[in-house]
Image (cartoon, rainbow, N blue to C red; front, side):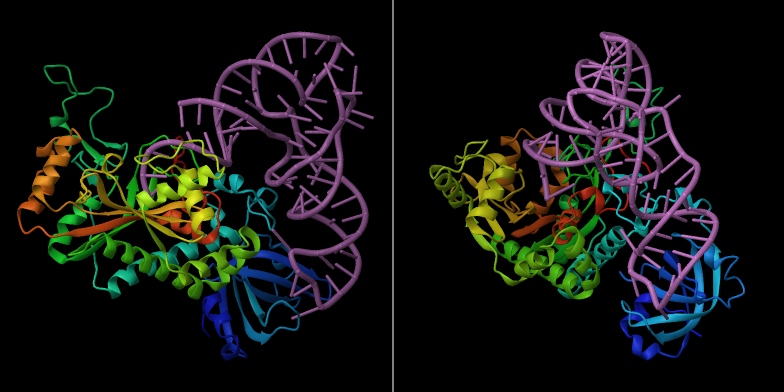
Length: 470
RNA sequence: UCCCCUAUAGCUCAAUUGGUAGAGCGGCCGGCUGUUAACCGGCAGGUUACUGGUUCGAGUCCAGUUGGGGGAGCCA
C-alpha cells in the first residue's frame, strides 16, 4: 500500500487503477447519499484538484464520524483506486477506511467555507487562506517561479550569492530603511553631544535591513563573472498601494564583461524562461486563474513569450509620448525630455503606442542612481527599464560605472560621501571591468503572471504600513 | 503622505424620500439523490465598526475615531 500525493495519483490515474492507496489531506466538501454513501472532496495541496473519496455506509464510523465531516477536517483515507461512475473526475477512491485525524472544532465559525470569499477577508485569516483554491494556486505558482529562477541561472553558469540581510552601510540609496538595533529604546545611550551613541549598539554602528543586494553582489561579480541574488528586501516607505510591500523578494543578476544591450537581452530571455516554465508546469493553476481571476492571463503570458521586446531609447520614448500628446492624449504630468516616466506615461507607451513589452534605455543622468554608467553624450546613463503591459515597470537595470574617475565625479555631483563607498570604489581600482545587472521584483512578477490584483495576495504574509500580523 | 470610496448575520450582499433589519451560502435538524460549490423543507444566528450629534423616529443624515479598499507619489 502506498501513500501518494494527490498530484501523483491524478498525473497518471490509469497506472493506479486497482491499487490500494492512502491519501491524507483536508476535506473541501462532503456530499451525502442516503443510498448509503458519502462523497468526500479531499485536498492535499499537491495540485489544484482534490480527489473524490467514496465513503460507503458500511464503514464502522460512517454515522459517528464520516457524516459529521465538514470543510477543513483532516482525514486519512485508505481505499482502492477505481474508475469513477460519476462525471467530473476520471478516478476516485473507494474507501475501506476513513480516519479522522483532526476535527474542525466549530464548523459554524470555521473561516474558510466552500464559497467565494473576498480577498480582504482572507487577508485577515492569512493563516488559513492557503486552504482556498486561489491561495493554494498562488503558493504553487510562486514556488514554480522561484525554482525556475534558480534553474535558469544555474543552467547558465550564474552563481547564487547570499548577500546580507543586515547592512551597516548606508550607501544603498534605494529607499527608506528599517533600523536594526539592540539598544534599549527606553534608555538610549548618548554621546557627550547628546546624540544617540551608536558605538554602543550591537554592530558598533548604525545598521539597517537591506534595500538591495546589488552593491554587495557586484563584488562577487568581479570574481565569479556571473552571479545573482534572490532574497528578501525591505523598504520602510509609507507606500499604500496594491503594488508595494515593506518586505518583498527581489532577483538581481549581475553580469561581468557586459554592456547595457547584453543586460537587456538577459532580462528578456530570463522573463520568457520564467513564464514558459509556468505555462508548462502549472497548467492546472493557470487554468484556474484564467477562469476565476483574470481571463486574459494565459493569453498574456503566451503573447509575452512569443513576441520580441521592443527596444527604445529614452529620447525616442519621450518623442512618441509628445506625439501622442499632440494628438490629444492628455497627461496629468506633462511630457518633456528630462522627466522621469510616470505610471501614466509608462502605460501609454506600453499599452497604447507599442502594445508589447518595451525596454526603455539610456535615461537622463539626473533622474538615475550614481552607479549607472555615464554615456558618451555626457547627459544620459546606461539605464534600462522593462515595461510590461498591465503592470508598468517590472525590471529596472543598468550598466554600472566601471571607471573610477567618472564614478567619483558622479558621487561628488550627487552630494554623496566617497569614503562611505570605499569597498565599492575598490572594485574599480583592482581589475575593473564593464558589467551590468538588473532587479526584478518577484511579487510583481507573480502579479503579472496570475492577474491577481493586489500584491498582498501573492506573498504568504504581507507586510505593509501598519500590518505585520501573523 | 495626499485624494476618493467603504463598514449591516460566521461569509457574500439587500433594505425606496429618514418609518417594524432581509436573502443566499455556511451551521444544525429532517427529506431526497452515484453526488459534483447538489437539491427540497425547517431551525438557530444582529447593540447595523466605535463615540457623539440632528430628529417624534437613524442601518440611512452630520462630526470625529478606527478598520478595509481604490487611485497618486515613491519604487521593485
